[in-house]
Structures are given as structure tokens and as C-alpha cells.
Image (cartoon, rainbow, N blue to C red):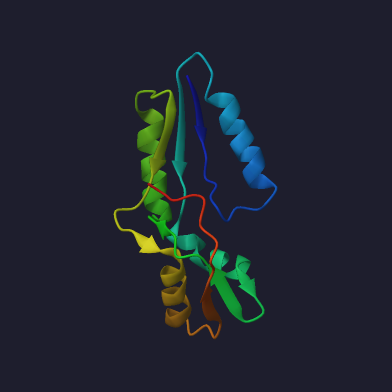
Length: 130
């Protein structure tokens, strides 16, 4: 059985995401047991998301719903998925609680006394964790 972990997300580096998606698209139609596990958002990525989304002194993010997980929980989920029976598809992992992306980053900035301002974008997020 072929197993592939996919730890990408909406805010992955621009060159990495298309390559990872291409890899997943090559695996999906295979005729032997396969499994993709795809935990998409980590709480530990919140600072990086804020940094990547900063223009000047403003952090611009959509209010998309996400279900982030702590890295330890991601490792446990990937382990359970990888040792489980093949599903011939993608198993997405997400935390138990939904957050608005812009609000989660706003809370992070406030907790860390970061002076950047939040500015909600009008663009719609293309990926949400399940």
C-alpha cells in the first residue's frame, strides 16, 4: 500500500503547493490500496500565516473557517491514519473547534502585543479544513 502525508495548506509557499497537489493527483487514481492523510492547519503556523500575509503594518486575511490542530495532535492523527486500513482516498484531519482565520490571527497578535493591524480581505478562501 502507498501512503502519502500531505501537510500543505492555503498559505504554503507558492511553488510547493502546486507540486504537492500534483503529487496527490498522481496518487489518487492508482489501482492499488492508497491513502492520503491531510492535516491542513497547525496552531504553530499562526505566526507564519500572519507574517506571510503582512503588507506594511497590516495583516490581510479572509475570515475563512479553519480547524487547526496542535503539532502533537497532528502527529497522532497522521500515525492513526497511516496505520489504519487504506481508504483509497484522502483523510483530512482537523481540530475539534472552528475558528475564523482573521480572528485567530487577531487573537495571536493581541496576545503577543504585536502592533500590526488586522484587515479582513474580500477574497474568499479556497480551502477549509474539515
